[in-house]
Amino acid sequence: MPELPEVESAARMLKPQLVGKRIVGIKVNWPHHIDRPDTEEFRFRISGLRFLDVTRRAKFLVFSLENEETLLIHLRMSGHLSVVPASPPYDKHTHTIFELDSGEELRFRDTRKFGRVYLVNDPQDVLGKLGPEPLDPSFTVEILKERLENRKRILKPMLLDQGFIAGIGNIYADEALFDARLLPTRRTDTLTDSEIEALHHGIQEVLKLGIEKTGASFTTFFNPDGSQGEMQNSFNVFQRTGENCYRCGGVIERIKLGGRSTHFCPQCQK
DNA sequence: ACCGGAGCCTGTTAGC
DNA sequence: TGCTAACAGGCTCCGG
Image 1 (cartoon, rainbow, N blue to C red):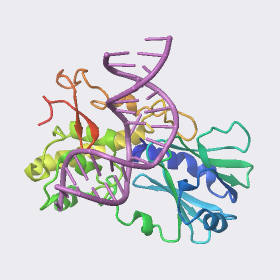
Image 2 (image 1 turned 90 degrees about the horizontal axis):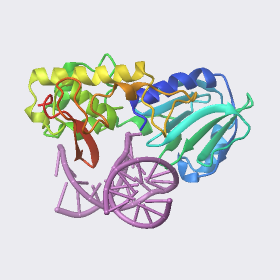
Image 3 (image 1 turned 45 degrees about the horizontal axis):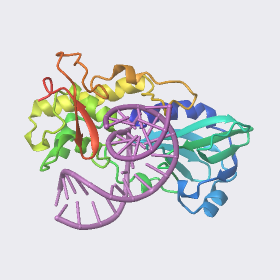
């Protein structure tokens, strides 16, 4: 669930809680959570290192550590991070725990176990194939047009392709397409210049709004500090199947595209 | 190049 | 009320 705005919100909340603190121990209750290196080497290399910075790239949390090490965490569907005192209660889905010299712990809870932890010297080993950051000033309409050239893809699956553009997930793809008034089933080679501009605008608008609202919260997801995001109150189409479109009054439809549920207004979106 | 489906996991919700 | 199937914010691999 966590997409760019949720991960950005998490990074902003975690940064002041972690920078300057030192990792003094690791508990790994589900070894598969650690993608690389193996658990033994992971423990050896990360122990004693201090957090220097917490940022985001795509849907990855990027923790810069001392000693030229970078810790990367991807929350996937159900991951959640929090910094709390090193005392009970421990949730049964908390699989990886970073013990800090402050007497606190950074806990990685992940019900579905899809999340992953990486420790690398060169972050590009993990982040290298990602597409552009959609909110970076370098991501212009012209760049989007260039990246669409000579390609024939269905719009929605393309937005979910992290190599094409980074950070968009199922929620913001649907919302961006509604904003741009484009059907999720449109083929990219049929887009006019003004439609590409609308798409570019829609992507940036919904992501910026998502960050302003500190992300979207569901029963299974909330921010690191326990607060609820507010973006779910601003959805125009996502999870509004059968309800009326705020723009035209039409009925929001739901279809499957690329295995993902897809919500749109068949009247507004062309 | 690109699409759809399966697989990875557990929990919750919808439907009968 | 109770069981079962479908479904869930993501991503990767595979066959066609």
